[in-house]
Length: 99
Image (cartoon, rainbow, N blue to C red):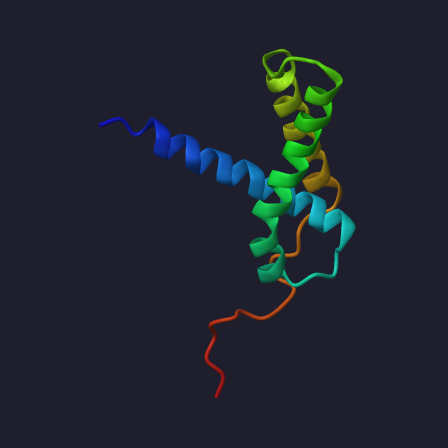
């Protein structure tokens, strides 16, 4: 049994989460971190798939632009994280006990 499908699934989830979280951090910087974390994969999938649909609609084969598009989206993610870092420690811990 190969672990390649599981590894690919995990890598795509991390990529989409990073892409979505960087877009959410740039668009809505005051969003709560847990809410942003839950919305990030869905946002990342949408941001990754829309250019694929548009470029495919123009008539370009997906094989010709898939790797450059992923590299460009990865660069956008890194630049957005450097420019506006997601707030991880803005709010108190969610599972902390308070007496």
